[in-house]
Amino acid sequence: MRTLDLDSLEIFRSVAREGGVIRAAQRLNRVQSNVTTRIKQLEERLGVALFRRQGRSLVLSAEGQSLLVHAERLLRLADEAESELRAGAARGPFRLGSLESTAGSRLPAVLSRYHRLHPAVVIELSTGTTGALLQKVLDYRLEAAFVSEPFTAPGLQSQAVFEEELVLVTARSHPPVTRASDLGRSTLLAFAQGCSYRKRLEDWFGAANVLPERVLEFASYPAIIACVAAGTGCAIVPVSVLQALRAGSDVGQHTLPERVRRNRTHLVWQGEASPALQALRALLVPRAPKRAAPA
Image (cartoon, rainbow, N blue to C red; front, side):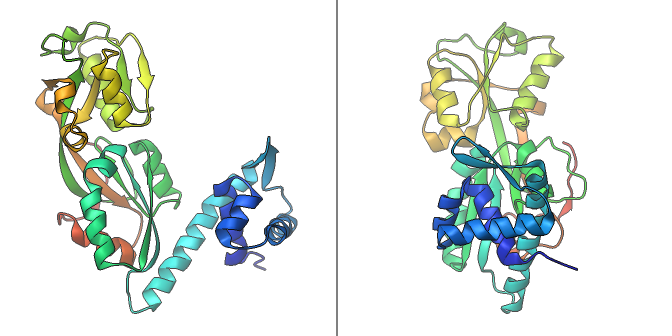
């Protein structure tokens, strides 16, 4: 006998996302006691504790983490069913993931046009590395995501949408770089593990038996470029990002080998595309969908 309902799952997901009952109640426009009661009822039905207290916040237990994956999937399916029943119109929430670089340089114009054409769709955009975004699509926490080569994602559909040129950036005073050994034991500035651009640069270093002195991890391109300009180290950056940030004159730019600098960004998703996702794909460069595969 089924004991879960979508309303309870929505409350549970909001508490998980907000890290507490008070913020979840505000987001859901409910009284705090109602949210607390519904969570307790859900835990009693399942016979497990879904949260544990950490300081002033609530964090998911192992059982809560497992339920969240299923809740994301069920709530997404419910959203899709409602959209399809309304004459196939694109509407409702659309959880979309993106690389930081794509969000800053490629998506503003696309999403602006999307909003004008489909005002009933509410896009919830989150950024991350290729590895993290792929996992969220597989777990149904995102409906689709923009990721970069190289990646492997069996079972996901993929559409190549943007061509990128990657460039090595250093301080302006750095001598010309034509091979990895020209960098010596330079410090590498990059996003966290799972970033496909970082992997390209590390593979280039590795092929030349060059080991960076250390790797400093950042969460944004403005921070990376500012530190590169200050002489902290080197980084790999899409040319489109330098143009969007108008930072080309702040750093030294060095051409990478063809196999490293040429790259494509893909839109990936799982299963049948919802009306909201179909509408997004229609605005992007049309390419035949294919199974995601490594570069």
